[in-house]
Length: 205
Length: 178
Image (cartoon, rainbow over all chains, first blue to last red; front, side, top):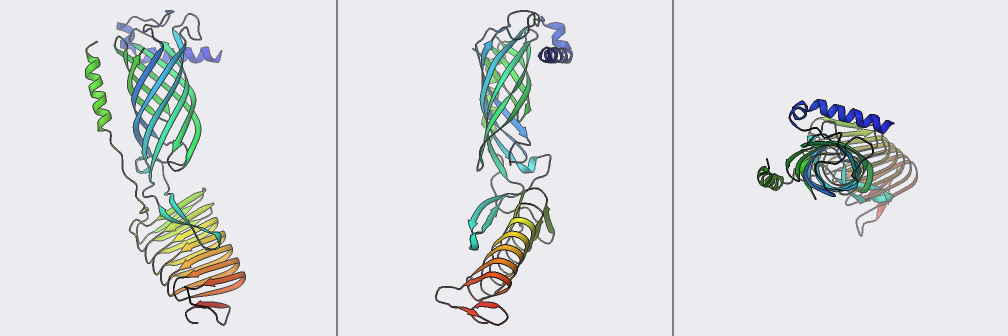
């Protein structure tokens, strides 16, 4: 029930937000087959992010790639042109605390053992420091094929991430995005969410 | 529509290529000389002096904190679990009401440690260290120094190789002379 309500709300919002596309494009959201037949989507992209998970601060940019394997071409909802894919990816982002929207604290970069079993910090970051993240998102990609050119998707999942100097951790991932078809099997793809934003090109194979 | 693909691919690759590293690591800290830089609350805070010398660093009421500074700095730390200080010459450091205080300090350092479980300090020549209401107070002197212990269970000083630690009056230990 919730899934259906979410789908209806998402479709309604997206179609309302794209009146031009709806006016001039053939609406396919009620078809049973996607306008692009594919089993795998390869999407290299630019990555932007702010307020990263873990001990890092600031905003950053980087590169990444996402691969999405179509698991259910017919999707969850009968009579609606949706499909389900499993998305996995790798994103690298370099964050700088000075570019953040919130505050930051410097962090100790190096400790040395002191007398009496103490530990003494001998080097700290500057202006909040810089942080290198490698994200590995694993998401369920729920696609809605709205017109011949335009599709939208939601992506709940998890994000494994490696922060340089701090090791691995895991956090939630949640994205919404859209694709604009520019060639037979090529789309511009935008993804908004947490922990990153992405802008890239999808190749449907 | 279909001819935009190659052009877009070129633009995309160019954008990727132009994306270089953003910033670089620095270890200078962010505090400006002549102003009090205070840090409190939360779990960790480590401050440094962007101007190297003459900073005034304060941290309190958290878990781990510390300061890194050059010469002529003032560092205070209280009501934390672990406090560390790394300072150059002529620093004035106070650490109190903590579990542990650790410090490296240069010449002519004045270090005050009170109401602490463990104080461990390495100081340069001409330094004065005071431990009060401390379980363990260990000082490594790299030259002449004096250590005053008051209500300390384990009060120790180590002197430079070959120099004996002197026991002076008023519960003071020293390297060099009393």
